[in-house]
Each structure stands twice: as C-alpha cells, then as structure tokens.
Image (cartoon, rainbow over all chains, first blue to last red):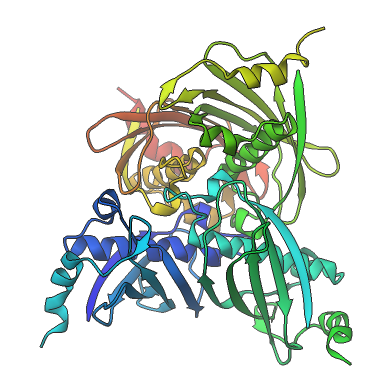
Length: 135
Length: 135
Length: 135
Length: 135
C-alpha cells in the first residue's frame, strides 16, 4: 500500500450556512490529496497531462462522519491500496482533523486516457508504485 | 416513487481545464435537484431549517458516464425511491444532457436533525410523499 | 444602453458560515448574467470560443450593499452602457432580490482575443449591439 | 505598512476550460491571504467571530495581468497600507507566481460588525498593527 498525507486549511469560502465545510468541497480536497500523493512519488499530474495523459474520475464516493469547520487544519491521507492494473487506478482517502478524529472517508476510480482513449497505466506510474507493493 | 426534474445551465466557473464540468460540482447540482424536488412537494428546505430541522449529508456517491460541458443544459432527475423511515432519507439523481444522454447518476443519504439530534422524518415530509408510495 | 435580466436561485453550496452568499460567488453570477445577455442578443459565447475568440476578464469590481441568502431568487441585470470600441467591452451588473432591493453592483472589463492575441470587437457583436446605441 | 505572504497551490477544481484559474476564485485566495495576515499578527479570525465580531466585505476589486494555471504555486502578498480607523479596514493583495511575475492585484474593504452593528476597529487589532505604522 502507498499512502501520503496532505494538509489543508479550511477556507471561509468552503463553509456553508450550517457552518460546516460544504459536502461537495471534499472532491477538491481529495483532488489535492491525489495530486500530492502523485507528486510525492515523483509524478507530476500536470506533466502527465502535458504529455497527453489524462485521468478523469469514473466514480466518487464519500461517507461523512463528522463535519469540518472554518479554519480547521485537515489531514487528507490518500492511499493506493492495490497495484493498478489494466487502464484504471483507485484512490482511497481519509480526512482527519488536528485532533486525529476521522471526519470522512471515500474513494475515487479513474481511467487513464491517452489522446482521449483508455490506455494502460503508464509505465512510470507502475515503476514508482512497484516498491510499495512487493514484499 | 417520487421524481422531479430540475434544469441547470453549466457555468464557465464550473468547468475545469479539461473542458469538463469538474467532478465535484455535481454535489451542488444534486443539491439543487434535491431542494427543487422538496419544493415541488410543497416543502421549503429553507423553512425547514428555520424551524430547526437540518438534513446533513451522510454519504454521497456518483458514477460518471460522460462529461458535461460549458453552456450545456442539464436535466437533473431527483427521485425518492423508498418511503423514508426512521431518521433517514435517500435521494437518487440522474443527470442527462439536452439530447437525453445520461451523463452521471448517484445518490445521497441524509439524516434529519432536530436541534442537532437525529429525529424522526418530519410528519409533513411523510404526508407529502405518502401518495407517491401507496397504490 | 443594452440590458438583460437573469434569474439565479441561490444554492446552499454558495452560502458561507455567516449565512450569506460568499462574496466571491458573485463573479460566477455575473458570468451567468453576461453569458445570458450575449445569448439574448443572439450571440453564443460558447460558439465564439469554438471559433477561437475568447473574452478573458481584465478587471472586476463589486460593491456589496446587502447580503443574499440561501434559496433567494436573485435578479442579475447586466448592461452594456457604452458601445464597445477597440478590443474591449465593459459590462455593468446589478443584483436585486425578489423584493427589488439592490444587493450589490459591479463591473467587468474584458479584452477580445483571437487566437490568443487582442483583436477588434467582432463585427457580429457590433452588429447586434448597434441598434441599442443609435437614436 | 503591514504585509504577509501566503502560499497557495492551484487546484484542478479552480481552473476553467480556458485552462486559467477562474477569475472569481481569487476572492477565496485573497480571503486566505487576509486570514493568514491576521494570524501572523496573532489574531484569529475564527476567534473574532466566536466573540461576535464579523468582518463582511463591503467592496472587492481586482485587476488581472496574467493568468495562473493548474498546479502553479502562487504567493499572495496581503498588506494593510493604512492604519484602520473608524469601523473599517482595507486590505491590498498582490498575487505572484513562483517566478515572481505579478499576476493580479486588488483590494477589499471591510466593516467591523459587533452583534450585527458597525463597531469601532477592535482594540486588539489596533494594538497588533500599531507597531507597523509608527516610525
């Protein structure tokens, strides 16, 4: 398993009139987690896109346990739990607050596209993840 | 089953650099669908909140089949497929474009809170939905 | 002067923990007003972009008089007060609530780009606006 | 003059189909700059709100010189250029990219509200800023 933690400070813009972080904003927080998890592996998602590789989201799910509030410091733990195979990759996310309380968890599935068509997981992604999945 | 359709015109603000509606924005589109589905029943979610009833989201899931683009007119079909019982309600959503192509579908689960504590589905919600579930 | 009114229903997503529409969200509301003002003239901003014409924002200003709230129906009045000349166009916006109270007003300035370079206001824009500025 | 710099990594969610950061998103970036500028002074905006003090935005203006892109690291320089007096405070913002290029600059004006009514700039704000304005 490969994991990486990303820190996010909640903006006023991200709260709603309940005082909670709006439930839809975690999609962007998870995206930050995902991009930083790739970067920590030595992979730039921006560079991948510049080379014609895209990674659109096929599905997204999230369970909300507790709300986050304005100015909270959130820790997003992003994990790749299984070595990606075929054309797809799955990410798992857990959001905790500074006290370590789990606020929500979820997942996204993605397909690699090369010039708009599904393509095998790029070799460099395989290479970077390999060491986390071999005993 | 109770269903209601809501129309949304995609804003430039809601697209991303792929040219697609950003995957996280459907949470707000589904919220519009949900609020309008309640309104069409004669229920104002704002009034409910003003009376101390809240309906936070417990879970959200979505499958993306095709992207939506800037200026697309989207039809969000929001359904309550089962008569709510206990303290919870589930909504199902389907997004289609003007040509009737299904772009994504998903669901949200919610708990009714009264003064911050889980509470039975309000009687007026039961009353309004009843006729859609009795033969 | 050319003016057009657009209706926007405030989403929960657009409120903040003060219960107000977050001050940054009016940029997207004004964008809706702008796009609909062009459409009412017979101009599709999407088609313009598809032809290689872009209209990025050079400046944006807004004065907030009163807040808007969740579920409010807002009327955005978008105006072109001067016939555009050279490579630029200015829009003026006024947001009112259902009771006709002015909530905020502002403006945006834009430059026409053709293939990434400043270009004269397209002839079709001139043609469509002309009748609103001649006595 | 008092200044503070805040770092923001551009999210995919914040780009639009032009590939630029959507012009409305700088309101949230400036908000981050503002909140961090207060924190660097030893002032927590969250604590202020918890004490019943609010600081809604009266006006916002911004000039865009160059776009920002996905994954860019932006430096927001937030300044208080004049000692606040009466009930108001003004912030100035400059956004630069990693190469030091100025992308946009703007300002916001705010009024201090205590229990919903305009109130004098809190003494602790005066105290914290004082040393930056005396020679």
